[in-house]
Image 1 (cartoon, rainbow, N blue to C red):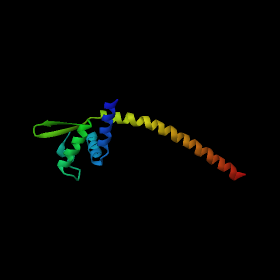
Image 2 (image 1 turned 180 degrees about the vertical axis):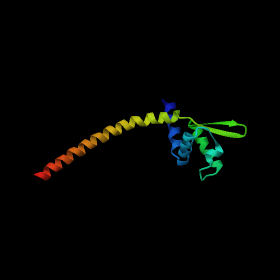
Image 3 (image 1 turned 180 degrees about the horizontal axis):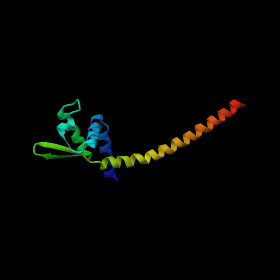
Image 4 (image 1 turned 90 degrees about the vertical axis):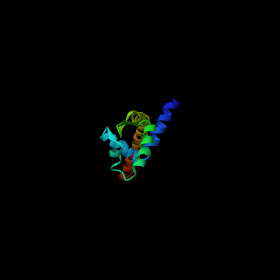
Length: 118
């Protein structure tokens, strides 16, 4: 369980940064990009992108492989799936809570309408 929590911690820490989320989204759309291609649309240096990729790689979200002089990156979705599984547990809790809240609000609204007619 501790290892699972450590992986989730690294995943969520990696996802906390908007540049890293953008890199993941780009790799989701283009499964095998060089670091240079991946860095092109960002207003940060190539060195900054490499550091961001290091964080993503440490979290298990990205793999890098060298082909000649070019380093290619690929998205590894498993840590994202683990994060979604963890979030879904809380989504069920909050959905049930919101459903109960909606019932209370509806009862209150109906009660106010009855009082308004009287």
